Amino acid sequence: MDDLLEGYRRFRVTSWPERKALFEKLASRGQSPQTLVIACSDSRVDPTMIFDVGPGELFVVRNVANLVPAYSTPDHAHHGTSAAIEFAVKVLEVKQIVVLGHALCGGARALLDGAPEAAQDFLPDWIRIAAPASEVARHLTDDEAEQRRLVEYGCVRLSLNNLESFPWIRERIDDGRLSLHGFYFAVATGVLERLRPDGTFGPA
Image 1: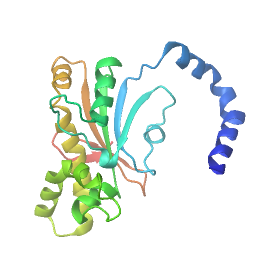
Image 2: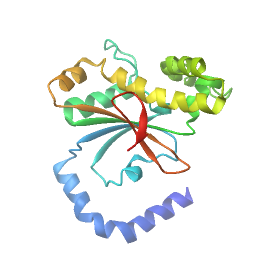
Image 3: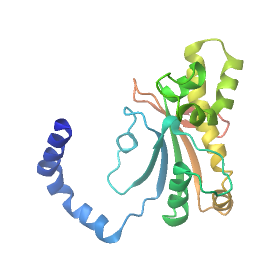
Image 4: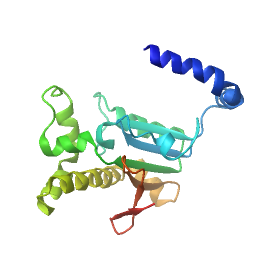
C-alpha cells in the first residue's frame, strides 16, 4: 500500500498540474469515449498504455481472458460484463468495440490445463465460455505452446461473435453506428496484431 500512496503523491506533484484542466473538463462535461475496450485483467496488459490514450478516451471492461458471454434473457443474476457493455453501447453510444487478447494469458491456459486448485469457486464456469476455442486448438495441434496461442486468438474471435448475439449491438452494426475489432498483444515483444477479415491475425 505504501508504494501505491507514494505513486499517488508523485501523480499529484508531477502529473496533476499538467492534467488538472483535463480532469476538470471531464468532471464538468462527463465522459464521452468513442471506444469500448474489452481486455483481460492481466496486470501486464494495459489498454491505455498500448493505445497511448489519456483519461476519458476509452471505456474499459476487464475480466479473465477478455471474454464476452453470449447474450441471455435479462434476469436477476449478476452479469457484470454484459452490464458494462450495455452501458457503453446504449448510454455512452460508443462507435467501436475492441476485444484485446494477449499472449501468456492465464485464463486461456486454464482452458487447456484446468483452473488452478486455489480458484475453483467461479473461475471454471467463467472460462468455460471459451471452451470451443480450446477444442479447436486441441484438434489443430499437439504442440502445447501453439495450443495456448490458438486459444488466445480463439478467445478474441469468440468474444466478437458473442457480441453480435446482443440484439442492440447487432442492430447498431447493421445500421453503421457501431463496428467491432479484434486485437492481440504480445507481452514480450510489444507487437500488436489485428484480426483480419479472413479470420487470421497479422501486424496492426
